[in-house]
Length: 476
Ligand code: NDP
Image (cartoon, rainbow, N blue to C red):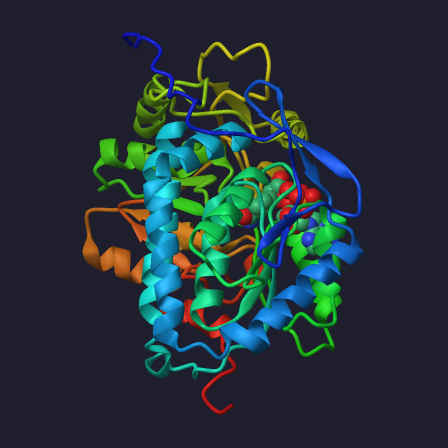
């Protein structure tokens, strides 16, 4: 492989303040609780101190959201609400570079992903749902909003998950209190500034930073009408228990252990690109990652040889370098979890191979890794590793592939690689997964619904279906 000269994106475009408060009722206010630090996972440098919202802060945010809902937002016509959403979408495009650089600094993801995937899809979500705001009567789910939405999001796609939550909620006439993840609060706080810039009425969007306790306070607040959560299955289950017996509407988007299935008639070079994109995109911190490769036995050796050759060309390192393919692991905790599960994979008898690469001395890093000789019983075949680690299993017949693919507590996504259209359709019918990609992987579009079966959660985000979680339904 020939080397590229370093091509770092300048960070001069972002202005990170030493400390941040909470965004409540259209203004940044000091929290009444403690503060915590957010670090750059690529360097371990402290970026800023961020307020940890207490129960009282969450209560103030919910009250502001309720006021904005009853006095302003639910009374406004859909076409007026759309104007604000279009304005936000345009500002996101205008400030796209700033948002992308900040996302890469706080999260560790490569700039080419934040610049070319996250931020454009964020803007697209606001444009898309802006288009729905005055057409809700055609949604099939009625036109009546729910009220105040409490939204808790993870660290893997910080601004994108914010967009998936806020854009449909606002389009339907709800107001929101959103908590970004503890390790990635900065783009949500920049989004708060964008709400000010767009003259969004105060209280329509409230951003409260903090950790699990802040999330719990939002979910259990009695004046929250709707809870939307993306994150781990364990916390999702805790949230389902917390809201059971209340009138709150809930959508949960949880973990996954997707099968990426390669048949012997697939175009193998494209399939290898799809395998790489499926598991090494965003360091594998992707709920729908293709973390289980199911490859037909007759081509398994050839696919593995081509895959390892391709993995050896992945550039791991500085997230702000425009040539970087794989960035930093988001936190020390996540790195420890990836290491632990990988060690268990080896101890249980699977064969481990990592791409040769020099990892930086500081920060949190893990080389792209593949395990062969994996069986269904291995923990690395069953549990979400949420890192750049692929488990490879083989199959002989389509039925065996289906059985193995569906043998998981999850059901979020799957991929099928084959030359035959009829096989794609028959596999898609039999796979218990919310999204099935054919001859591609990890493609996201605001018009397309996304969500899971089984322990991957319930409810859909994106597309017309994404409106259902924010409206009262046809009969109300
Ligand atoms: P969590 O599910 O703990 O975090 C998701 C969000 O929920 C965060 O904002 C978190 O706050 C908040 N939260 C934590 N506890 C509660 C609670 N009791 N009530 C309400 N909100 C709460 O994920 P982790 O970051 O701990 O990651 C753990 C594992 O989860 C990963 O290793 C990965 O396997 C999986 N994961 C899956 C994701 C997905 O998209 N499916 C996304 C992220 C993680 P805080 O930031 O303080 O944790």
